[in-house]
Image (tube, rainbow, N blue to C red):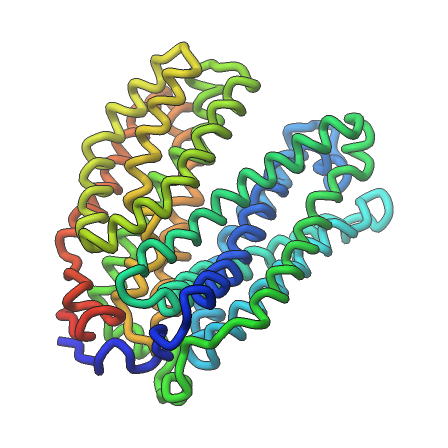
Length: 442
């Protein structure tokens, strides 16, 4: 059995912070999330314009595959980022970790926005593009765990779910912002201008946004106490492995939660085009409206978890996702009306909201302060890369073999793993390291 001192030990008491200061801190902490996901989508959406600038090839498909490969490599840098920045946050403080991660994000975006093309510097161009994406992947890997930990600690008892939910509000907001920027540029610039230089604008805007986020974070109150930074095993893998139950639960939640989230958001756009056969304009409208509603739901479901407990939120999410994934995706594959597709997608996203609204805080409550950022960030980054990052690849692989429905069962199966973890999870109101008594059985 693991034992620890009461929840307040290791991080500064949030009760000393006024509501206004808490809201300001939540905005500053979650601002990096917005920039992170803005950059994530800016690369994905603009790659069709800049692929030829970095990869000379007679095949447009080959160019896009090369940019997608670099995108994927950046994704798999996340576990390393989760480890490095988790250690930094647990050993030297949440604030310094969040400052450095957003600075690295800024450097990556600025680098892409200013990179010379293949025509100018030859093979060095795609190499530098890879370096920039690896830096961004490292930053993204560290951002989630540290920001989630900070927001959970600063929120205070009774409102952790509500205030921590803004991490996903800004995450979804970053997606929508990237869509709006690209939409505006496509209507202001010609196709030739977009391919020549217009694609650089979103990355330069991302770099500027990261600077703003860094300035906001410069004024944050540190939540890790001085005693916490002096803990001899703070941020160490050895200390983290003493919390095996928490690690397995966090990994299982991310397996089911990330796969389901990516299926209902990023992959859904391709699913609606390739399988449902809706036109691109209808798909863009459906997904934009669905994401807006999804974003607005986060605080409501976060507040619900403050009333019923994080464990019950996770049981509801994983149980409904396990039972609902196959019927929902099967029904979606048969619709012909955009509005029916919207209704089904929104149903799926409402189920997801039970998880996304508390994605960070439910994990933060499972770990003591000296390994909290590492415990939240590292298993999340690994599971997210393995299951969330591969969702589209697995789905398209099943489809290419003529067994697309097997992917629906795969999603349901991973949600089932999260359901078992939800049953195994303690009630963190009594046995969590933030609001409980700091004792949890392994």
